[in-house]
Structure formats: C-alpha cells, structure tokens
Amino acid sequence: MGVFDDLVGQERAAVTLRRAADGAAEMLAGGPGGGMTHAWLFTGPPGSGREEAARAFAAALFCPDRGCGHCDMCHQVAIGSHPDLEVVRTEGLSYGIKETRQLILRAAGAPTLGRWRVVLFEGADRMPERASNALLKAIEEPPPKTVWLLCTPSPADLVITIRSRCRVVTLVTPPTAAVAHALVTRDNIPPDMAESVARATQGHLERARRLALDPEMRARREAVLSIPRSLTGLGECVTAAERLVDTAKKEAEAVSSALDEGEITEIRKIYGEGSSGKGLNKGLIRGGAGALKDLEKLQKSRATRTQRDVIDAALLDLVAFYRDVLAVQFGAPVELANEDRRADLDGLARSSAPEETLRRVDAIMHCRERLAANVNPQMAVEAMMISLRQPRL
Image 1 (tube, helix red, strand yellow):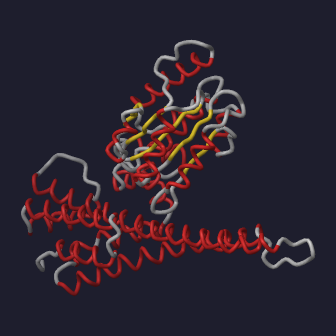
Image 2: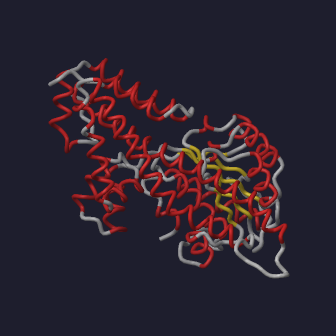
Image 3: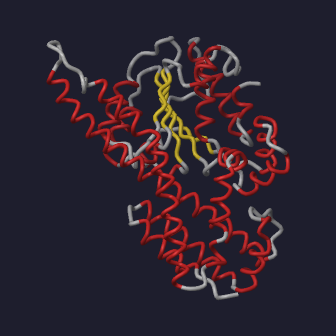
C-alpha cells in the first residue's frame, strides 16, 4: 500500500495528489512538472484528515517511488524525522509574527537530501494578520525547491492573498462505513463498536478511534448528551454549564501538567540553573529567566486552547444531537449520529417545533464563536444553556 491508500474516504483528493507527485518528479528531472506547484492549501471539516493528506503528499515528494509507503523516506516522514520536513503545530491560541519570521528563514534553506524542502503548517488559520502578511511574501517568492503545505478547515480561514496563491485540495467527511472499516482493520476494534463510534463522531477518524479505545471519553460524551433533557430550569442550566466548563478545565490541567514540568526542567537545565563552578556563565543563567517567562506564557496559552478545544468538542456533540432531533422532526431518511439515544431524540422532537431546534443549533454555534473571541467560558456556556432550555417533560 502507498501513502495515499491510507487516506480514508478521500479518493478524489488522492488522485489530485498522485498527479502532483508525478509532476514533481518530472520537475526534478528537468521536465514541465504539470500539476505541481509550490504552495498547497488542504481544507476540509474536522476529522477529514487534512494533516494526514498533507503528510502523505510530503512523503510522495521525498520518495523516489512517489509515496510507496515502505521506503526510508516514507518512514522518516511518518515518524517525523525527515530532515527536509518541518511540521508546524500551533500549540497556543495563535502563531505569532516572531515565530512566522523564524519559520520563513528556516524554509528558505536548501534541501538537505536534494529533492524538496517541505513546510507542513497545521492550523494555519491561527495566524494573526501580521503573521499572514509575512507568510504571503514567502509564498509569493519562494526558493526553487521549497513547498508550503497549509492546513485549514476552510479556504476562507486564510487571507485571500494567500489562498489565491495556493492550489486548494478539498477533503470531505469520510463515510461512516469507510471509518468503521479503518478502525476494524487498523486498530482491531470490534465491528459493532467501530460502526457505533464512526456514526457518533460523524466520520471523524481520530476522534472515533479515541472514543472506541478510551472509556473515560465515552463517559464524557454520554454526560454531554444527557444535557438537553436536563435543562428544565435556570438552576439546571447554570449547573450544566458549571459542570461542562469545570470538566474542560480539569482535562486541560491534566494535559498541561503532563507537559509543563518536563519543559520547565529542560529549560532550567539548558541555562545552567542549579550549577556551580568558576566556568559557569552567569549571564547565561540570567538569560534563562527570560526563556522561562516565554515558556510559561506559551504553556498558559496552550492550556487555554486545550480547555477551549475540549468545550468545543462537547458543543459539536450537542450540535449533532440537535441535528438528529431536526431529522426526526422532518422524518428525514438520514443516518442519525445518536441512534443509541433514540428515546431522547423522539421526546425532544415531539416537545418542540423545528424552528426551536434550529434556534438551539444557532445558540450553540454562537457560543463557539464567542469562545473563539475569548469570551469568558462560563458566561458563554451559561448563556447557551439558557437558550437550550427545554420545557419539563
């Protein structure tokens, strides 16, 4: 199997990328290189595999066989050790102008192994305007063998001047059957469980995998899906909001604590804290204070983003729930993400009109927008819960 065979439910995108890899090989041989360009934009909904597609394309660019999937080049890309591939992950809330300028300088270097130098930018939509303008200049006048692979949910997430200079690869939500098959064949997940989590996550492969393998994640999802029927009064709304935000905060703290301590220890070791002796550079130790301050700022931003991401995942589960309610209300012959909660869906469908269901979906989406705009999570979620309130059944 080649690297593009691992893309679940993305056959059309795979065809485009294979042709581009052929063009890249032609270009290296002095040919026209049809289909190949220096800047790519991978877009698609959450779980569609934007980063996986970009990584597969990077492997195909490095691989002499254009993505065989088993050579040293493909293996190095898969484990993240290829010297000419730089993967940018935005751990904090944004990727600033300083980091962007440093990235551009690194991307301008010649390839170590002679083929291409590839920058895979995950979450390119998190660049503020100044950083986007700096990146635009690099994309407008790239070095001959530098290739930019940008990943965003939608082309509109990037400024038009950047996306107009990129070739767009649009990925789609993988079918439930394709995700379930991948879980069964790759992770040995039982077929019934694989189909259930694939349907519940609406084609989000990685989330489906975690849901199948992590009992705590399944318990958190069940708690979220029990919220709609519990919202029968203002007190219940406030309690549900507190519980959701508190759960997200605890999960963010757990993730952060697992990373923060090791990073702080490493910084202190690099700058010689705790060392002694005549040869010790006192200026280096003092410089460590600034590096430690920068690290703490990054860690705080990462914790905030993690909390926001946990809440956002819960909100998407709620959107899927009310989408199912709407489907029941209209008798639409579509697959329900929450078929296992059919009794709740039927009860809410009977007790409200489709217009009210749409209003509740709008309230959830508005909450997502407010969280992205740095509104206090407790306030944003409380307001949403009140909008979701149901009559007592």
